[in-house]
Image 1 (tube, rainbow, N blue to C red):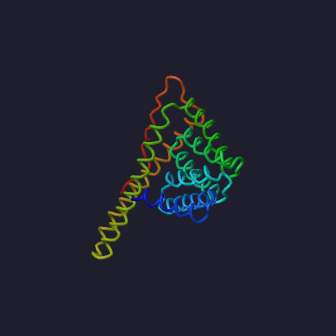
Image 2 (spheres, rainbow, N blue to C red):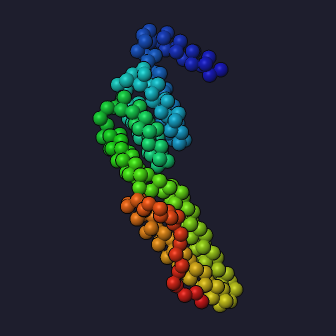
Image 3 (spheres, one colour):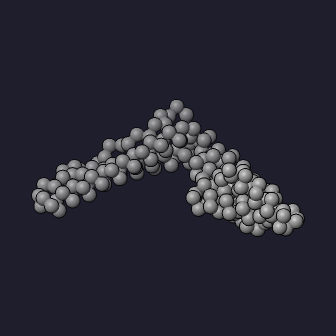
Length: 216
């Protein structure tokens, strides 16, 4: 049904305009509209395809060029944050084909290239940095749970008026503070390993030191 509608629309344009330029204009406008709608729905991949199809018909179309540059930058940024550097550069190359020298694209490309160099240095210094980083992130996510537990305890006091809830909140707060201190020490150690490398025959595990903070 959709194919039939497209054929009919093209036939109408041919009969009314009598020239290929009208068909080309209609195709470009349709593809641009499809790209805009895809972007509104957060579908960068389909938007990219639509704008590229418009540019195949009219490589000079300003709307399609601007749309493609924007969407390819968005795709590249998402790939960059996922550490998929090579795929991010490929996404930028698509935009560069139609908009060479675009400042936004070139700036993002330079940022990715710098990150690649820094990544190679970090990998050579500390090959297991990813595992250590993942462990730290999980630990900091748990801090939010601990903080929420304290807030829940305080909320219970708001309707029980039982000061033992406040005592419990204080104990929870001490524990949270102790955990923050341990994680800060782990972060410092992690940065040292990333910057300076792992000494030969050294234990690379990042372990939390004992806390010196008193508990109630």
